[in-house]
Image (tube, rainbow, N blue to C red; front, side, top):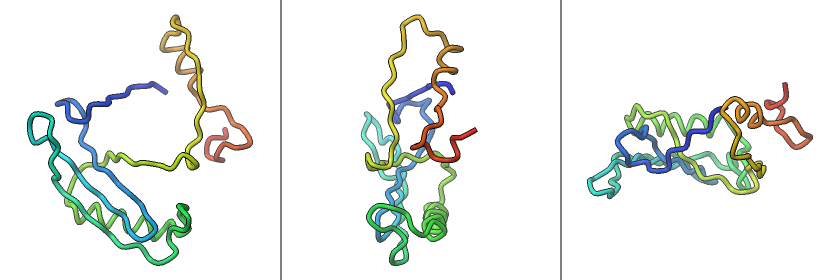
Amino acid sequence: MELNLNWDIFKAKAPPLFGMDISSSSVKLVELADAGRGNPRVERYAIEALPKDAVLDGNITNLDAVVDAVQRGWKRMGTRTKNVAMALPSAAVITKKIIVPPDCGKRKWRFRSRPKPTSTSPSRWRR
């Protein structure tokens, strides 16, 4: 796994992306563009309603309904962009602090950055 972060989304080389928010009642999508001088402009947006109880207490309980709403919204926006930026609650994210020595090359970094299976890891991480 190679770590390549580009924090400035409005640089010419940054890939296009849209933001997505999944709440208990709807899925909201927005695509931003650079309006000049670093000012963002809303290019496209869509809001798709979710059925009752599709998301409860911040947890997706009806995945098919949420996926359908995201797909409908993406089609309604009429965008080709497939890169998405999402905010996640801290309870839904597994984090691990690592210390990388200054002499660590790319080959060593790739080896060290692989997730190690633990009892709290999702099953898809297990090998």
